Length: 328
Image 1 (cartoon, rainbow, N blue to C red):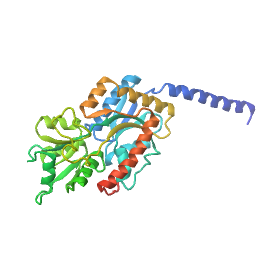
Image 2: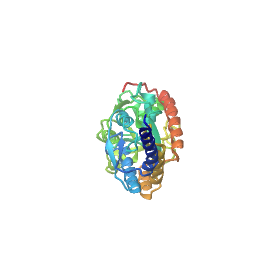
Image 3: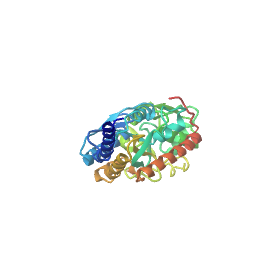
Image 4: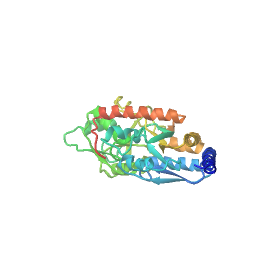
């Protein structure tokens, strides 16, 4: 290579290296897309839109929410895994992302290697145990007794196979020796509506999607699957208080992920944005009204360690609940 050409190559490399940090420091320079791996209007979607609004305020750039639902979050997750790792396509998902490896025989991505856990927005307080308002049961213990009767052929709903709601009910039935059949729907809202219409007799869902039908008297809460009573339903006993201390699945969460290969300083900026968002009084009030607490992990490394531990925990729970792995 001639000396002039060689010097041009060196200069170009130096310029690229110099521009790299500056470009990352200017992030974001255009709108960010957050892929929500579940239906619009569901609990995860509502919380994602809260985060997007706050991130837009922080960054001064539009943060757009796009719903890519299906297969318990797998379709949306795969779309983000395949996206360019530039910080402009992100994934917002529930703890289902840590459950999927334990309930699906094969995934189209490696959860622990193809994604970077970026920030935890919220940690669940628990789920309401809901039944039709017309169902003649007076308590959770009464429900368990009637469900075991010879004539009862009852079902339960969840927003799909292998999600947190499904796992929570499956564990409860395993501990109480219940035999309800699982009927999966596309969203939490649909799962609750199915209870209101009497299509199914039980579901466990967050307050955010349950409140309208509760207020309308179409469904009733007979228990709260959480460590303590939910503040907005103080008369509803916890599952433990109802006599089933070992039948509660605790610890759902919501978080932001980025494709593997995203620049570390971009991940840092996103992590800071998530942590700041959950301390915003408006976001905090919305989280708590929907039975969520602010996320408990801080740094991206702390959240990453937490996600890895959750994958191991849910594997044990799925085995205990007797859930058989299925194909996608």
